[in-house]
Length: 209
Image: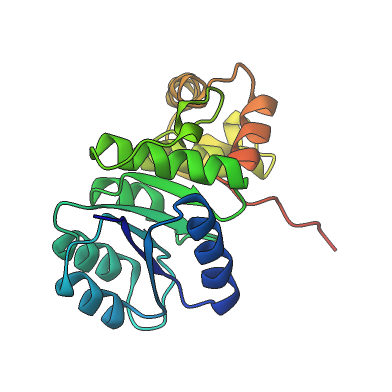
């Protein structure tokens, strides 16, 4: 049977672009596009869906509601979160809810397809040539505290300022930094910020007026 892929996003241009990307890569796949959670649930209950690509920022449901309903109705399929500017802690929430991956919308085409291939391969559904290439990466899973530390680093805060903001000691911050550096495979604060921006883990700091 051909792949059945659900795309859930309320932005028409984004769904059109993602749909074209998927149809080009998975030539025989059935691509179903929905712009609200209610329609997506209806699609999921109509038959097996191999992969759901889900934006958390929808007009008819909160992120936790979206995750709950997708998880409840995806059955034996897998789902990934494909988001531009996710709410605070949404990424950790998604992974805890069973999402196979979290992909920022700024990710490169090849990386998006590679991650989707890997998710489908792990579910035993498909393996295409792009998934065999080395060099592409899935996003690291960070704890809520690591994410908070990373966001404060991106704003230019020192260890002392980060500790004060989070109401913990500087020694504890150093422990979090070591684990954070290991998670995103860097050695310095500057590298951590650059890597986080590259992966879409934090937003670029806004210029001050």
